[in-house]
Image (cartoon, rainbow, N blue to C red):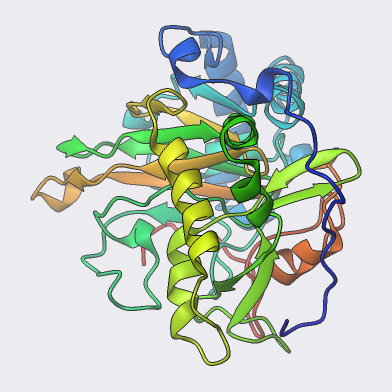
Length: 358
């Protein structure tokens, strides 16, 4: 492999996964147990913490928990974070009144709440810790374009963090559903149906860095889809980037068995027997455990008026108290220190929070 980290391949397949992280979509679609509705008191606390920071135009990228006191909501957020990291693997918080906020107010409130879930990480080569999921009129035919900058379907994938979070500011004219699926449930299905193909996913796959290359690294890294380490089964996956790595020097074509394993994995991820779709409302905040869940977004049609176009803010977070990750994750995460890992770190990038997409 190009960068020298060792793989840890288990001697036998880990047993099927039990517990709340192995959920199935049909069991949750009519439930509200994964939704936390913000109360008037919660919102008042958020606004009381947000307004002085906005008034002095505080650097959003520097906001920490101690800068954003939430006396009664804070303990609730800690419990929700624990459910994301150690329980079901996701939660939707609903009701932040973004319609009455400026972009700075929304970003400050969101970043402050996010500080209770983890430490923000850079999401691109520019050092942006506050991502804008917004159509820029680009095409994924360009190997350096990221899918969130288009109206295309994303396909199920993971990001480079412990928790990936979204705040919905504006919705599209149609489409743009948020989709989640449990990789633990996918594992259980593959274990029962095709353990030989499941075994393939514990072998390394070359994955494209899409031009965002850390110092001293190559244009791709190699890592298994499923990784079992210190009793935890974790997933890292982006089929598009596995496929696009084939264009790079030194990357062989996928074998028939690798392709069959990835195809079954994708088939299960897209199955309505497993996936859960949700229609965002303005003010929704979604928090997802990146190591046990995949996330996706359906294609969408946007509004012609610029001021109405679909717009979400995103955070990548390194969470204190998160699970240990195998050393190979350093190829994507930079390092594997709990609470200080993940993101895209390239030479010269300075951490910053932009208030406009681009």
